[in-house]
Length: 196
Image (cartoon, rainbow, N blue to C red; front, side, top):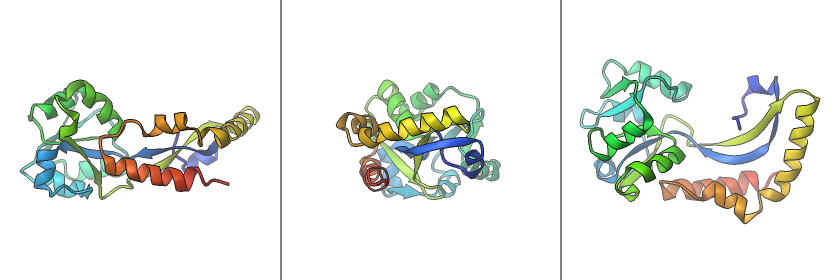
């Protein structure tokens, strides 16, 4: 699975869209989200420069080019630490109020949250103003005869599969935030189901 980028189109064949993916989110307890007035979306710059909140960023990880650039710019005067740490430790620290937020993909937050949060319903997943909230995901194969045939086969299979309840259940079943789920279903209906 990949995002469609111009440089990848030169070396790979892409299927029709397979899924709707959600960009990184601010994950925090709803009590902290209340201090931000329960936004659907919030500026990461405002958050990481607001001294009433503290967070941790994983130093051995990229959060995408755009977010990495923001974290680098505010590294000296931000309210977060950039350290080497295991993801499960971050979730435990968040649940025990040792930090106020983390930046994570919602599906990862949902997976780890079910293991490490006392109550996953106490958490909010907030979109980040500075990045696109959603993007389409594609199956990808090398740009050769074999890859061309496999992508053709995948596209033919998807024509039926994307309409099936079981397939849609896999895509929609685990989200931290109901706003994301509503928007993902809307994008799925308009950009995946309505493909030519």
